[in-house]
Image (cartoon, rainbow, N blue to C red; front, side, top):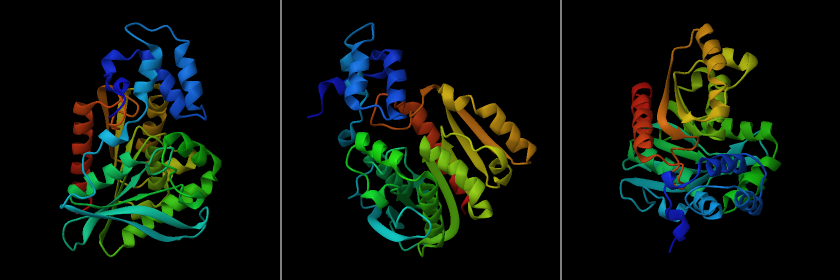
Length: 300
């Protein structure tokens, strides 16, 4: 049985708790510290600690496509990754039913490794008709450890440049895979959104479409190297990421890049992730449908 506190809805949680959770997700803050800091807040309508506990991910009840679904075939694969953190990488490869080839989509995780939510997104992509690879950036240090707290610690500890190289190599591996039609898209969330921006600046014409969900912008000369068609997905209430939008988009336009950008009303950072109350079901569905539509347009 899931914890009763996790049944709290977004409307029942004080905005201060959402802000604290955002800090918790994007820092080395321990779970105990997160709950202790929540206990010191004055909130309306209930217990601050209960609200904070409700924010913690509930992966067990957040699947949308099970690995046993007959529309897909899912397995883990390992492949070479020269210049990365160990020279090898592992990912979750999911294909639609049939022999292919299929348009390919790389699914990039947040700042905590390949957790169950990102695997679920890869399965959703396969149901939509794409062969999807969700790489685990933590594989060189043992892989996703089974919980996000230790996952974010591990990801913080590894060499970031080599991590990005591992994810670049994952993209190239998928593009050349026998199940791929040679057209490559990439979608990522939070840190993964930044990675999609990075891949667009790194892979050049080898990336055929990118959809970063609330991802940090690339800066400097990297902006001038972005060539891919891009669909930027933003949350309305996401101060840190949204502060980067004007300069980033201005630079992309100056470079002649045509792109699309959508900000979803009533949403917070992480609104696509259905394992926490930040999830906005209506807007997440719209954003995912737009993502699939964008990929189908560019990955024929």
